[in-house]
Length: 139
Image (cartoon, rainbow, N blue to C red; front, side, top):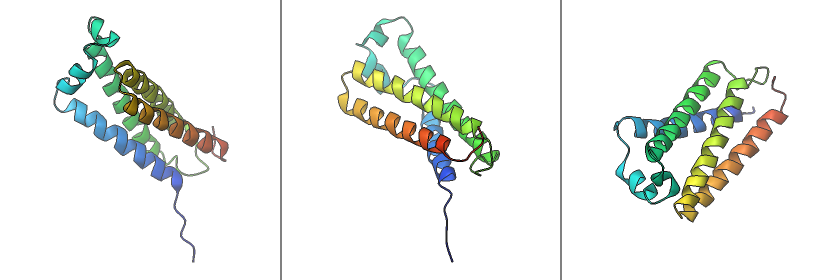
């Protein structure tokens, strides 16, 4: 007897929980957190009018969109190998954009440790994207 785990659905659930939880943590308080304002107020983003608000809302929007796309991909059963994985691909594309933004922001705020983590997340996401798209899924 063999037990096989579908790794694609595990990836979908991981990114859904990661993006969904972080989006909700930003949306529920209905305000930009003080730590975000302090971290970026002295950077280029903080100097641009509404730069902090725009950056925070852009990150929140991307995290929400990523969660929604992964949820749709699960409901469409894109974890099956005979399925089109367009929603997974769109979600992973947005993840790459988000991690690039987070990487840029971390380095802008001289937070190199977080920037290194953002870089690792970007590379990991790119690896997952390449791996999923090299399989026998429909595109």
